[in-house]
Length: 401
Length: 232
Image 1 (cartoon, each protein chain N blue to C red):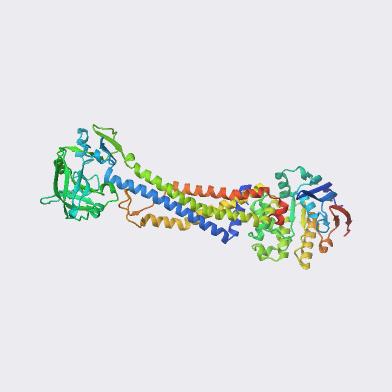
Image 2: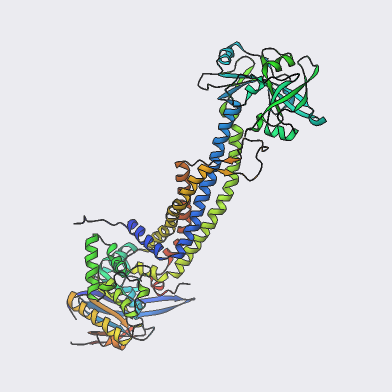
């Protein structure tokens, strides 16, 4: 025997709203399809941004910054005039870590290369060839080269300077005493990376060679380290830069992109909401007799308002269900194959992989669902308020204009 | 008059604003209805019969005077209280059936029970009983657009009767029906009136309905012109 069931007004509203929506057929499904499209696009686009953020930070960590860096206190990557003085002896505190391969010293200097008789400014970076902390293929710097300095460059640099593996080019620099010097370098390897700050206009040579050429033995400009957990602070002339500080630009960029995308989300949502709003307005006029009937059968007008609001809001529930049907396979497929940007991303100035893999979190899905549900509820309630002012006897006759 | 009075109407006046003026639809009605009556408010368009029916059904409020329905003064009821009165004790039958078009016959008849505290099993039994009264047990899964006018009105009767209300108010219930269907549904209502002792009040000017009434209240220009009692 069934237990007595107390059906409260809300339960009835949900039951009736569901019946009404399903019964309305194509009209409901058109709205639901538009809204489900908004769901999928918003989640996918946000997923791409999260994926980009994750990939960019990950690539920066693996290729450039490790778990953090120490910068010479003069060093400012956006001020070329600081580079000449941005060096100091390697602090003794760092040496054990360097020996264990947990820290990589780098020395920077400005230089010029002359590919194919043309002059091009380049940043010369010295890095130990034995390092394995960063993914830069520095072991190639140990290649045996006659009468030239082995050097490696990134793909963007190779493209912009028309250099290939095996190319030789003159590299000119100014040593710490102010004397200009030059030598031939041979490109022993060209690496592919998504991190432009180690590629664009950069020439990498062995740290030892660099220190010799600049007359700066045992000096460095910057250190990347592997262990973030150690209690670090400024050491001598070198100030700590945490991973968070070093990736702040990515956060800022993602934030800007997010704002830009929000405009797109708003347009998408507005389109869907407009459809629901129109449906609600039409429903209220076309279904006057039905509204009057609900009142005659024992509903208060406020309960009818609730019913119509629930009915409108339920579009979002159905849209979420529909979005799950085709969206989940799409999301899984996208997470596997990624989204390939249909343009060259290498000179964006940010770490952007040519293919970005979206990352979806439960929070992203729930927050999107909640936003769409709330917006739909508001848009449904707005026109439904008119019902509260309807005269039920006129509604029963369908006479309200 | 049948048993005890369930409706008491005293000096009922109803005015509607029209433009800057007013139209008086009811000009001082005095009526009493007893339990189990099968009565009709008869009159031409504009005589005030639907207005009176709406006030009895607590869908509208009197401007002056008093309408006491099942012991409750309509003008003193809040929106919630009048909804409760309609939900628990009143049934409505309309000229154009007013069925929920996207719901099945079963769901239409079940609707008034959803608002009351019945279990699923109880609701199912009550709906099937009501559909049996009107001879539509084979149409439970049909939707109103698939039914004829007569069948739609029988669904409306089942919906009005399913909760066994004390009072059923029918506004021109046969206006959209042919003669055969009209007699069919009137006989159904007459049987329900006899078997369940439900009070039926009609607003009509249809001769076919008038032929079935046991009490005829003739309205003219918002006043009771005269009454006729038929002994059957």
